[in-house]
Length: 460
Image (cartoon, rainbow, N blue to C red; front, side, top):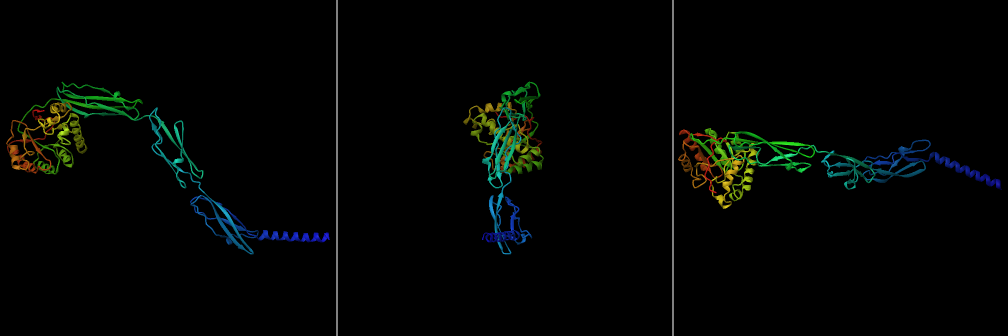
């Protein structure tokens, strides 16, 4: 009995073993080679299928795709039907982000910082190909003279960047002269220093460190150079200069010279007036309230550009001396921007004899007529009035007679006219005035710094 049982058990064991052997020989084995995919890449599963006798990969069907636009685990399903086998297998594919984030530093690197100062953070940004803006994840560590910026994205990729800090000052301080860097005064007149300021990128206001050297002998003609020097705490030095020209006051003479002067321009009429002056080869003087291409043309053609006023607002200009010189500086800057020169020949709004200034500041003209000279300006009034700003503004014949009836060979004839809008009659009269002057032996000149200044009596 026992023998029979043992024989049956042995036979069963042999059958099972045989079945397992056949199964292992013929059953397809499916494996995946690339179980990781890079974020954003084109991923193609590399799957192999084989048994003991042959490679069955060509019989394998992949029935799902991997989306590499998203980090994480995705599934790839494969199936194969071989002989009496119908096999399905699922693999886990890991989409990974292995790209480091990017840190961009704002400002300079290396950064220059004033000695004994702290570096003020100029800012930074951090972006990641998957997480986007991760600036708020940046950590900052200062190690000696370096600042390290570190950031880690959600996938664990880390970036690090260094900003070097150089504690040094190589920048020279700046000295700014108040007033002009070239001043002209007449022999014996007082020279008044306009002053200066000095600033440094590290030390701030260092005006009190400026050393001024040089002297002006107001009793001797010549050019005197004043030197202004300043050194900052790092040893950087700056030097600027101001020339003061002391000259003889021009001696009055006549000789039948006519100085045509035009106030309040330029305007559209200035072009017509310049055309007439060019045609007749006559030079004139323009006391301007602004500057444009006509101003540049006049200057380039040899006419004199003088300063009149920027606002022509009596209540502002004559309220106080600060307003007057602010107005004068504004028109000076305007002219400089156009012709590259700062004229020092001027005419007061309303002339030096005006009485309208009494309404705003008693005695201001007495002060200004002296102060402009101290600051190197030469002011001119007139001794021939065309009255083209008065009742004869639209009467070209009367303007003509107003001029020619007041000309004289025994004086320098400074003629007041205007080239602002509305003075068409002046342009019409101009050609006849020039013709009269030339026919009667007069010469025409533009005012310059040697022209004897014609000045009124001051009434305020």
